Length: 387
Image (cartoon, rainbow, N blue to C red; front, side):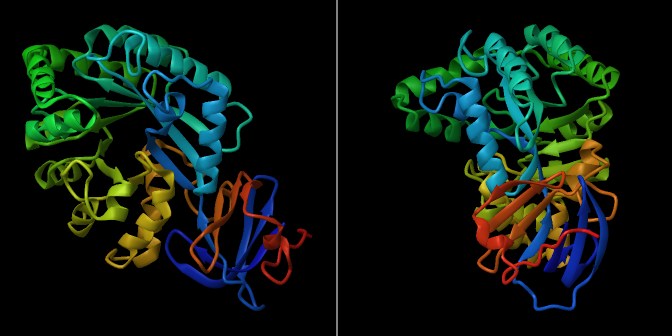
């Protein structure tokens, strides 16, 4: 099959009117086109290394549980429609979660196992990103079992103790608890109790060392989450972390880059121009050369507009901004068969029309999303059988 008379976003340049040939699941030829441009732009399939959406799909309202197959199928559709062809579903182990509820020891372990059972045969290439609260010592053994079973593909470590990382501003955390329905007195009491129950620094270091050893033994990449200090960035680099997710200060991000970590931030942050929690802006990080990866975070449809938002200021323009959601996460995660439009790579492609809408998504050469049959018309896009 050929896709002809399209604009191709390659890893290092743009072909304004090009064509590519797909055989089975791979791109086998890329060339120039001589026909009338269709107005369609072809991007490499987006690789999302951190998407929190599965937890919301499973529990769209507090204490309202949806069946795993319903939740996963709906998320699969959302991702494909947003141009995501490889997705790491982020699920969390949280020490403060009540047993059986979202992010608790038992609940998260069950989600990971169920996800692995349900993602076979879906459209998007789904993988598991286990988010581990570094203060949650009791969950390390469960993570060990999941890694041994091959159920986890990426591990990130976080500390959501008030005053740390994402919640370094305690007043912001109190305000968020009030928004969730607590009175101010209840919110402050909740935060105070969490601070009182904080785990010692020595125990956290021990936990991190155990986690690092586990990840290395299973050849699974490790990421840090919400880095806020120079010391933490150095510690994470010493532990073998390869990705710094959502750093909350420029200082922490700068040291992470110096230590060769790739820095990931949320596409909604980049699209909106600000963090919803008042932390570091992805656009500011990008302007300082401190952004390598865009992640869906909580909304996959934000990836494409985030790319456009950053393309104007990227040193390599649109080509550089597209790498943030394709080639760069592929490199960070060791996905050598995808991440760019190149001969020999998987035919993971996103077709976008002149109105900047995703109209078709290919995964390994197969259509996994289409807005309709109009795209197959020779008047819109020349798709001819490969010779």
